[in-house]
Image (cartoon, rainbow, N blue to C red; front, side, top):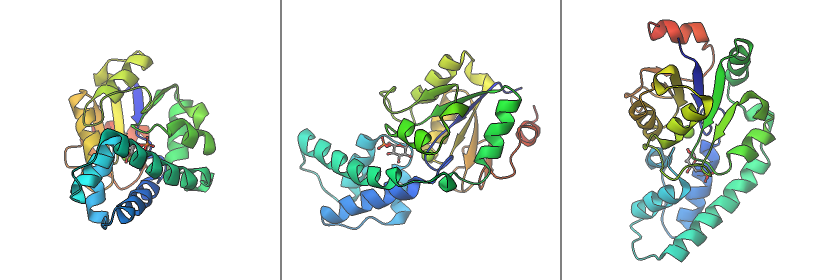
Length: 218
Ligand code: G6P
Ligand code: MG
């Protein structure tokens, strides 16, 4: 069976995706263009720097030096942090706590595999730190999803080979990363977007270890 469960953070455990979007939208407005929700998918799962580059590309902004880029990324992050510091445990997505508790009870290893440099702040704020054996976040990796680095490092720190691991992801780039890491991938969201996943569910609600293993014929 599966020995390691690896979770993305934003959009899987907590709906911070809406806060990222609001902060990027504010930055777009500051730069003089609008940023529509249908284009937001491209920014999910990738690093802050990469997300900024995609946003600038959407806005048709080309001439910008590295210092200016850093300043813009910092500005977005300061707005984003205002949202996350106000977050409450009620914002943990449906089904997350029962599922984490079930994994803990069965002594299955749990890791976080997130591109976010704010991951620990968020887990702390939501009282979720104690569930994770391993935390791999944006401070520990250099290559953004769809590169498999984040998940491979999580498996390594869990002492498990990739084929013993399963990843839960809401982003297209994250599913791609999990699959190229050689892991099972469960998409949380829309099957149209996450078609590369082995399984797709609308949320973690009603998901159990048995239902996952059965669906994967394990
Ligand atoms: C997550 C989100 C991305 C975000 C990235 C970096 O993977 O899905 O949208 O850009 O983390 O987050 P950070 O908190 O470091 O800006
Ligand atoms: Mg995500």
